[in-house]
Amino acid sequence: MSSTFKSIWRNHNCRWGVIILLPIFFVGLAGVYLTPYDPIRQNLNQVLQAPSWQHLCGTDFYGRDLFSRLIYGSRITIGLALCATFLAIFGGTLVGLMAGFLRGWTDRIIMRTVDIFMGFPRFFAVLLIAGICRTSFGSTVIVLTLFSWMETARLVRAETLAIRESLYVKSAIALGLSHGRIARTYILPNLLGIVITSATLLVGTLIIIESSLSFLGLGTQEPSASWGTILSQGRLDPIGAWWIATISGLLIVITVIGFNLLGDGLKQLRDESKL
Image (cartoon, rainbow, N blue to C red):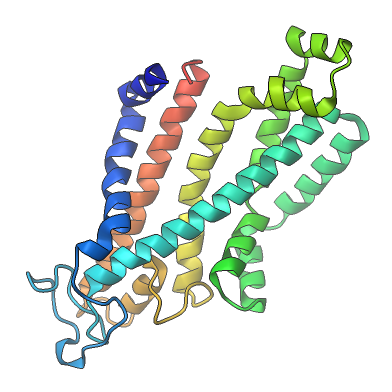
């Protein structure tokens, strides 16, 4: 285990990804102790205050402290992305494992289903469903999950087909072990690297999609805060209240870059057979 962490830290992309993401996660988790302001409490006497020592990131159109809202918004934006990623990776891994291991008609049916889902423009399909459904944390997670599992399923299927041809798996089949035991004991552990890599890259994509939904008013709703809703508010006066859109937009970009760097680094390590 320690050698794995050392390999991750030695990788340039992984190291920078960790350096970027650790402070964001720390501030998001410990943010309630870092600011004395209520993120939804309005103070009309301090509307559109520029960044200062009193309000590190300024205030918004309702006098709410932007730093507090960004901290709480990180929990919603990243939390939504992580929940949807977990469900999408779990479902994609299960579907891909079944297709690659059972093969035959099971494989054909599953992969044609994957092709159908991948044929829809994901963002527009998510927009359509989000616009029809009642917006909530759970519904947003379900919508994001519904169109995010297919890439993982294809990757896991391809890897499973290769592992299934290995000698130890054929020996287990010849010994009469059940399909469930073979998949759980001999195949699934060897899929861990590709699953972790796929999950890390998917989080960044889902952060962008969730922020886009909130920006368009189809995600998190006021007075709750997500980075997308804060970014949407900043468009009302992008010059006079530049700090609203600028800071929230930078946070989205930096966080996505951090996850992408970590995912690219993990992919490099997997290709080098170090992970």
